[in-house]
Length: 478
Ligand code: FAD
Ligand code: 2HG
Ligand code: ZN
Image 1 (cartoon, rainbow, N blue to C red):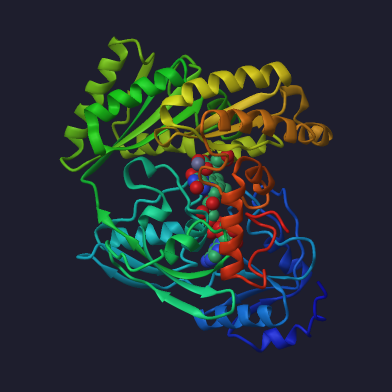
Image 2 (image 1 turned 90 degrees about the horizontal axis):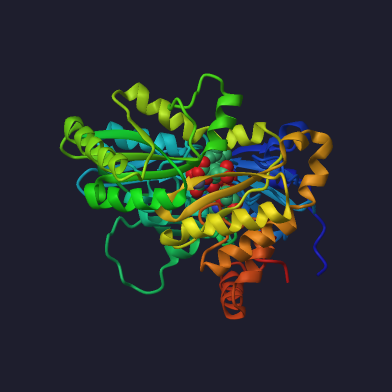
C-alpha cells in the first residue's frame, strides 16, 4: 500500500498540550524494551498531559497513516511497547496521565489515569484504607494502562485474579481518535458485547486506555509469609493442596522457586542469602492474608508446616516473624528476573498448564531439554498457585559471556519448540501473563486454531480498520 508522505513534525507539535520528543538521544529509551531485545525507530515520542491530547495524537497519526505505539512503564517482557523499524511510528507515552480521579470506599472502587504506576495506585488505595491487590515485582515502574493492556498477573492472582478480573470500567481513545467513556463502577452489567474485556489484554493493538475504574478490597488485618524447602514441583503441588484445605481463601500467594534462582540472586545481590542452611532443589514462598490478625495467621502457617514436615512433603520451613523477615523472603523472589538478566542472555517462557499437571510438565520438559541441549540451565520459578511458570533458560555456566550470545540465541527457536509443544500437549498456554507482543506472536499463531485466528483478525479489522494501532504485535502481519 502506498503511504502518504510524512508531514513536518511541527504539525504534531501544535496538535496537543504536553511534550514531544524528537531528539534521537532523548528518544532512545522509548525505542528499546526492558530486556534490550528489541530496538525500533520512531518519528517522535508524544507525552500528552490530557485525554484530549491523547486523542489529538491518535487523530494526527490516523490522518497521516502513522503507527501509534502506546507505552506505559516500558517494563513489558514481550517487546510489545517497542516500535518496529519502519520509522513510521509515534510512541505514545501515557506517563503524564497520572491523576487519581476518584476513590469510593462504599463501592470499593478507584478510578485512576493510565499513567499511574501500580505502586501509586496501591498507595492511594491504602491511604483510603483499602487494598488494590494487583502486585508485580515491577510495580514501581509499570503503569495501570500497561497492566490492563497486558492483563498482568503477578503474585496475588491466586486470591484476587489478574488485571482483567480487577477491572470494572475503562476510558479508551479509539483508533480513530474518539473517546469511549466506559468508566462504569458496576459489578453487574449485561448490556451487550463486553468492550472493556476486548481492550484488556489487547497490548495496545485496539485502542489507548486513558483511565480505568478498578476493584478495591478491605485491607487484611495481617499478612504472614513462609518459605518451604522441598524436592520437586510434585511435592509443591501436594503442599498447595494442603495449604488450600487449611487456609482456604486466606492463601494469597504460592510461588515456586528453583534452587538455581536463589543461587543467582545470592550471586548478584550478595545481601540476599538463602534462608536455609542446606540447599534444596525447590522452594515455595507462601503468603496468607488473615482477617483475624497475626497470631492467628502465624499459628495457621505453623500448623500447616508441621503437618507438611511430618508427612515428608517439605524438607524444612521458615515462617517469617517480622515485617523485615517477610520482606527479605519476598526480595529473594522479586529479584530473580534481574539476577537472571545479570547472568547473561536468557530465553524466557511464560507458560501455564492446568495446575495439577505442573509436576509432570516440568519433569518431562526438563528431561527433553537436557537431552537435546546439554548444559543449558533451567531457571524455573513463578506463580504455581495459578499454574503459571516462568520456565526460563540460561546458557551453560561456561558460555555466559557476550562472545557466546549469538550461539546461545540461535538455539531459541528449537528450545521454544520443545517447550511450547510440551505446553500444548498438556493443554496449556504459551503466554500466561506477559502477552504475545513481538516475542510470541508467530508461535502463538501455530497453536491457535484457524477460526480463533480469523475471529481475532476480524476484531482487529473492526476496531482498527487502518491498522495503525501497535502494528506487528499480537497478530502476524497479513
Ligand atoms: P509497557 O511495557 O509500557 O507496555 C506493555 C504493553 O501494553 C504494550 O503492548 C503497550 O503498547 C501496551 N500499553 C501500555 N500502556 C497502554 C495504554 N495506556 N493503552 C493501551 N496500551 C498500552 N508481568 C506480570 O504479568 N506478572 C509479573 O509478575 C511481572 N513481573 C515483572 C517483573 C519485572 C522485574 C519486570 C521488568 C516485568 C514484570 N512483568 C510482570 C512484566 C510487566 O511489568 C507487565 O507486563 C506490565 O503490565 C507492563 O506494564 P507497563 O506499564 O510497563 O507496560
Ligand atoms: C515475575 O513473576 C515476572 O517475576 C518476570 O513475571 C518473569 O523474568 C521473568 O521471566
Ligand atoms: Zn510472573
